[in-house]
Image 1 (tube, rainbow, N blue to C red):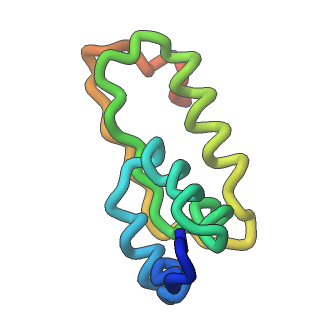
Image 2: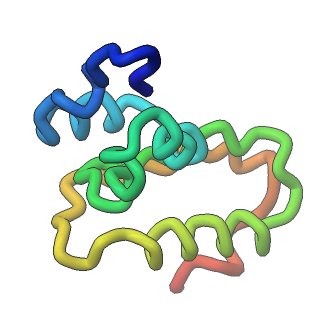
Length: 101
């Protein structure tokens, strides 16, 4: 954010570079980046890479499924999703009931 008349350097970065940076962050860290600069407000919705990690300790499969569903639902449908990664520990809870046979 620009303060005291300083230039907002984040807003001047090209989208491709911002998407590349965001692609390294887990989804739960990408969304709050909308606070960094006004131009970033909806940038997370069109990032071509989606990483869902850090699920350790989550014992509620319904919460997790709803989280993934909402992240996908809020994405810009015009944007191609080039990579989708979910890092799960099968010991946290059983996902078999949520996956098609």
